[in-house]
Length: 302
Image (tube, rainbow, N blue to C red; front, side, top):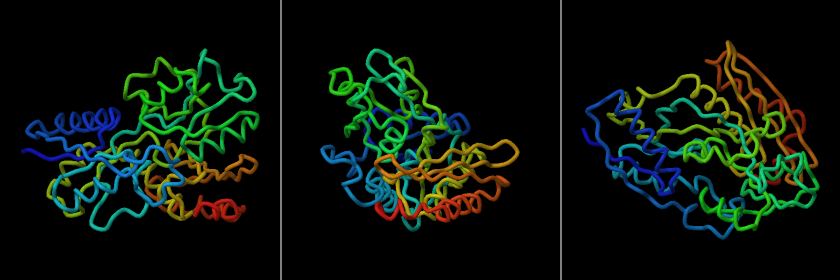
């Protein structure tokens, strides 16, 4: 059996796709793949901050259209890129075991966040990270940075930035863990919704649905769907200042916060419940943030 798998063309996207293929083949040795690299809107527009491009799904739209048209059988996405309102007739059919969702600091001279000199230039393209940086250190300077991981690291090495904040998972998947200066505490830097997870998207009526679900990790999916329920109820996308952390012991615990973009305001809450009630937990957390005044912040971004 040979399947067409769609992905973006960055080294990280290819690494994630190869990882997914290896998981599927391990469970189903008869499966073979053809990789279809598809350029998305987010890949084409590199000179504009993400928050100003507009629209949802800028890193997935073209790939999902190929799914709908039957050109590919499955798509491999970073979960944080998938809009909460997924295209009709498509579905997230599998979420393999999630990587650590934390953010990390990469800095010149291997300096930790608290020790960065005043006015240090920190690079990020994320409104959430910008807000969290300023909430914790309002004496730092934020500068937008776009491009893939390698491009960003080159800009750091060229001296255009003093530090970068990036997702741990992406650096790990590309073998760059050795350059991490500091793993940032989730107490101070709540991750993005879906960060660290990979999602497999397919047509809702796909004949290969059961095949894709052989690599699903139930706890990872419950956490992801809870976070997506939170984001959907708040009306946000990946470019709003919302951070969230989840984990499951016996119960599913969720801590979430919304920030003003200047880092002066933070509204935080936490909820927990049975993992099977992931959707209810996400909505309950969102309502708690709204009740505490979260909408006053988010209305500027929606």
